[in-house]
Image 1 (cartoon, rainbow, N blue to C red):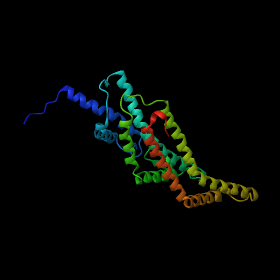
Image 2 (cartoon, rainbow, N blue to C red):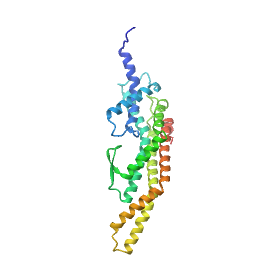
Image 3 (spheres, helix red, strand yellow):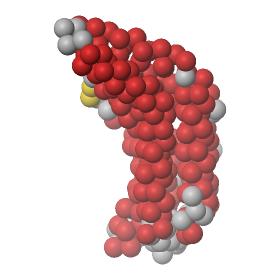
Image 4 (cartoon, one colour):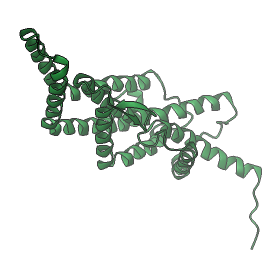
Length: 266
């Protein structure tokens, strides 16, 4: 049995073939839902990035003249990170919109003081914001969104080859326009409950003007809470349908982002 020998050329080739997909996958892990949670140790994220990059390395086509230690190599490295971050951020923005919707309803109901620690950001968020986030994560996993997002990442190595300029104005405009649209969707999710609570608050204002002796702070908070929860329960079916549509649109946008970035498709 002949011993296995390694030379510097072989090691350099292997490092180069793994380096470029690791950058794109690493950016993806930093921004993708669930994988980017602060509760996951950095060491686990590094292992996840290298493992996924190793599995996807056969899909990578690297120009022979692209050196890691050149100016062009530095530019390509930054671009790979940006592409990975953009793919994960497109879907992550949908979860941010759900948190925004929950916080909007909470403030209207008077539940702004009821907060929980959000493991995704390591900061406090309102109870309803956390509840909407949980609904979004369950919907995301139910439609195999994590697998679809990994599929989009793998496809990007074919449609967005390494060493070619991709992150142009159209690419960035696509991500920015989707961010504006997704927060608009979050506001629409919260709008029915907010309108119902606005009507309740107007009614309480009329009652207070008609009967000033009533203790508005004593009964108004309770009535607002009851009406808010009633509006959420009545509209739960429409809320879940909107959440499902938002997640599916985010996954479709991620697929379109890697399929035809040059036209800024959305």
